[in-house]
Length: 122
Image (cartoon, rainbow, N blue to C red; front, side, top):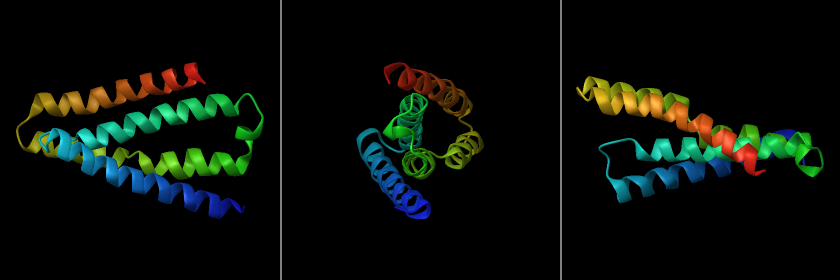
């Protein structure tokens, strides 16, 4: 499989999952807080930590094409820093300082913890 095809297929899968997860989170938890963005960023951070920890050990997961598919394509399109930033600004402009701070700081801290957890479980 070519590198570009692997990247594109991973990106399609990640984007579709992101869209569905965001819809699910909004239906399940409401739209008062960006739960969908938080969910996909944490799941993507976990997957990236898990996969890259395995990749550093060698074997089939270290193959550059698989790495493009999972890390750059799938995780890159599943997660979103720009949407996190935008939704945090929306919370701020709506006068919701505490949820905005929790969204920004909580996403970063929890994302780092998910990478560590994923790597530890690999």
